[in-house]
Length: 205
Ligand SMILES: Nc1ncnc2c1ncn2[C@@H]1O[C@H](COP(=O)(O)OP(=O)(O)OP(=O)(O)O)[C@@H](O)[C@H]1O
Image (tube, rainbow, N blue to C red; front, side):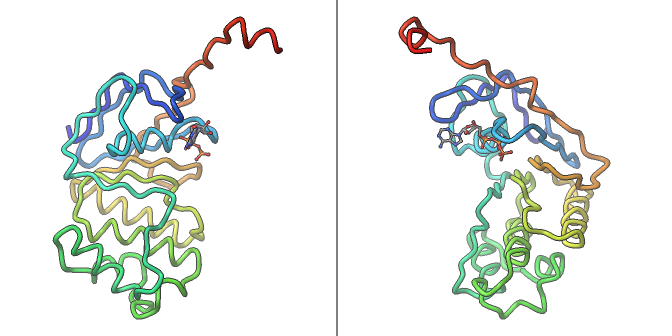
């Protein structure tokens, strides 16, 4: 077991959004999070990442094995593509970036300032950061936003290779990634009930 989530209840802005979520994520496994806009997938990923505490329940993981990629790409626009990856590799105590450049077909763009990339190229660079971290458990929030079909397929291949190498991935996405080996967790049945209105509120309805 690499990650265990037990009876997790999570909140945004002090209001519960998901209740009693439980799953295990083992080495070599991917789990796709599904659910409508606003259901709480981002909040779940933030909580599993340790960015916010749960209201109830437990997340069991070695936090040094996790890496979180949220909606923001986290790239430095004035650094080149290669410099961005070197920067992030050093943050994680690593050096090699050539595999990350190659995996996301960024080698021809290595010397271009990241701020001059297209939206999809920026997203590919943001995702390439995963490969220079050396982290085992990827927590990914809508990773394919801005990617065209070819780049989406490229991303799916990178995830598959990561799983084969013993990594794992928890991915919130609305699109079909073609990762047929992945399990799916639809969070919809776990949506928290709206708080009951008190008499005071009722008087204004
Ligand atoms: N900073 C905030 N303060 C208060 N409520 C918030 C905040 N951020 C998000 N929310 C609310 O929390 C709920 C869960 O949002 P969340 O971003 O986790 O959903 P999601 O499933 O990731 O949605 P999407 O598919 O649109 O990305 C939503 O109702 C949202 O409006």
